[in-house]
Length: 146
Image (cartoon, rainbow, N blue to C red):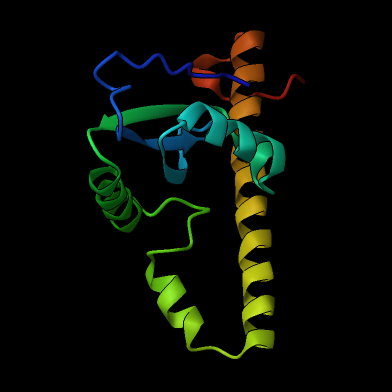
């Protein structure tokens, strides 16, 4: 697992400063966008407790002068970049809110399962390409040895 350490400048540590962080998997897919005045601590919490924690590979951090500015940027990023595991501030959340509770739970579980399966398949493709590259196959494509 790769980690990106956050080293804010003194200006970023000014009272009220807040960051938007983006979490990526090892296939460089955006999986989560969040907002926090302590992004390292918040990302650590995701790495400890989120059901998608095993997918975390690295993250980026963008600082804003105030929490409201960062929160607006977070919402804009979620809506335009469509990270896999964000739910709030999405069209899925609006549709979900109008759906009966039992159906919501079933739908959410199936979405989670499908995303995890897609991520596992993508990770396996990346690993296969890395294995092929280590074996000297051209362009990272595995070849059968007769």
